[in-house]
Image (tube, rainbow, N blue to C red):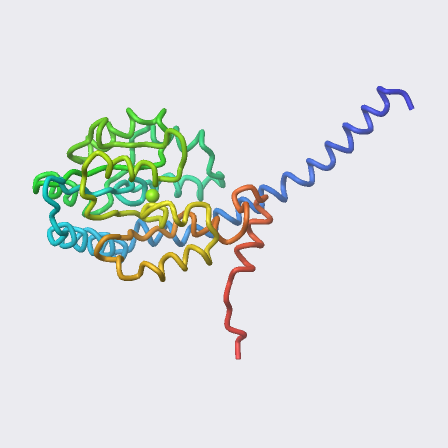
Length: 269
Ligand SMILES: [Mg+2]
């Protein structure tokens, strides 16, 4: 067979294969996105979601007020940004409506648009801490290239103490432990950590599966509500990738079957 003929046959085979693979992949992606619709509805529509965020920030305020003072060390509170202080559920809704997977490119476009809302209670809490002898540190895994847009969005929403010193984005690693240690080494008494992801409380759960993540919670159960304050986030998170090794590298079909296989179900009798 001539090279050109081999090329033609190979191209036709490739075309046929991608022709079959793409609709299946698209369908699986569509199904993945459809499965988040209920979570987005709950997040955006329910009073219960707002009640939980207020509950978190009211508890945080009590914990901040009661945190022991250490002589010579100013009190600090370390908070995450996305789905802790900032509500990006419109991005999740856009994904669900348009069958869009999460990509760094579209996420950056969303952050550049500066349309995130404040999580209920978040602005009030930040202002309380900053006006009662504390310092808010905003430690997020947003990319450094989105720094200016993130700061502008936060300022529009009324967050106080937003500066180069206090807003620390992802420069080297998504493991936040080094950034937490740096704040402590600068002389701060970190009274509490607030986040929607266990990784917002230290490096112990970073890149771990759900069994290890739940063990972390069991080991530290006495700290929740006092040193660790959790915000609800059913939209996304490491709880999802914690369901299988390399979950984020799986195809949409594999992610779908992973989700189904992790259901702990009643047998109907
Ligand atoms: Mg977050």
